[in-house]
Length: 553
Image (cartoon, rainbow, N blue to C red; front, side, top):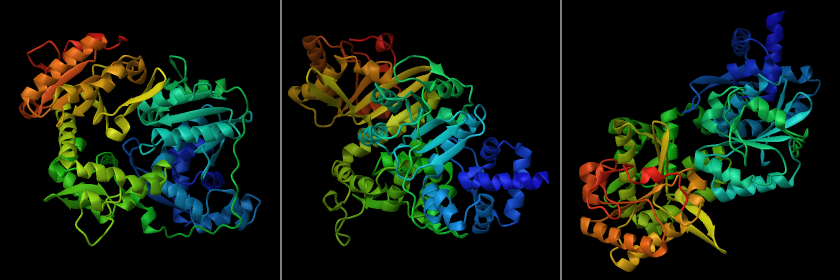
């Protein structure tokens, strides 16, 4: 019967694409949505498949399906192989189930991409990878292979560069699709792909989830303009090769009871996942600042934290007389597995576990090297948190959209000037938009720049940076540099020193200077900012510098 044929097709499809939802299964199998929805229900009733809830910021609530042990036993003879061979040849073993559940959020994005691809290239076959540089490879009609690489939020520049380098050293697909989390990392990836040995196309992850095969979201590394997914696949020159990983000698059935620790990516709600990412970005965050960054009430933020605490993913750590929020080592591992980065390396940098559990928690008694540094300068850390939280909360009331807020470890920019490698290392980077216009900025919260020489030293990296074309190359426009001093007198001194240094070097930095008292009165987007040569204050992103945003020095 037709229904039985659809059920058999779904069993085979779930053997290749476990944890796809019904919309994705319909696109990949070629059956109608109605037939797939009905057949999936019958498979669940018969005990051949099970489903899990899932949602992210990008993907609305859905149910993702996987075969039970009974379903795998039914699939094996239909594929002409024994049970043991099936577990080695398909991503359905106990080991594979653990990997795919840990990567569930990333897996869902790639399934949406594959479903869009299926609308213009059907039938296709998808292969997942455990440890290869590719996340997945898709074989499309004509023998062409499309490689897919996703960069997660927790992946840093160095690690991602090495991953692409390893990819280029091995067997290559015919075309490469890269999914990036934000514009800045997309621009960085474009530079990495200069001279790549295969056609490569890039897109923002949030656009990939929402787009179809005919939407122009894909960008080339070195050319302006955008093309569709169908065009990108068609432009791939060679057929390419899907890398082959060593298959395990033996594999076990996954079992119908999923271990509790693997269910967190499924059970967490989108707001809870956003909170986890914010706690990774901004360690030692106060509850009210988390509420500001999430744009929710303090009570709502408290409920989210309680949920994360119950799952042992986050903790309220007593520090300096108050409780601050940190990810637990389990929370760090959850994000590391999702984004395919080393959990050990993430813990080494960001763990809040004490070196000596019986001793008071101070910066000296902390495992994570970067979290230790932030705790050591907690007053400065808390001030930066307060600024970005206030900015996120105030922006909608002033007509701004907050597109991106990056912590210090992602806000740094590296560039070459002459023979040397230089950097700017701000306390935060942000990107706001209004009426389609981007307004990026760097934030420097300065409490120790009190002498003219120190102030000049703080400005020197930006003078080097803005003497090159890199600000426009990195962001499309020249970001403004926001400097916050401890009082009005220090702000006036800094402006005078900055004016002298810009005149001496001939480099104009789009500088805005304020102080703590003014920001308390006006908030970050208010009339709290001064620039060189002006005594009156202006609102943030007000003239004069917007007229020069596209100009190169």
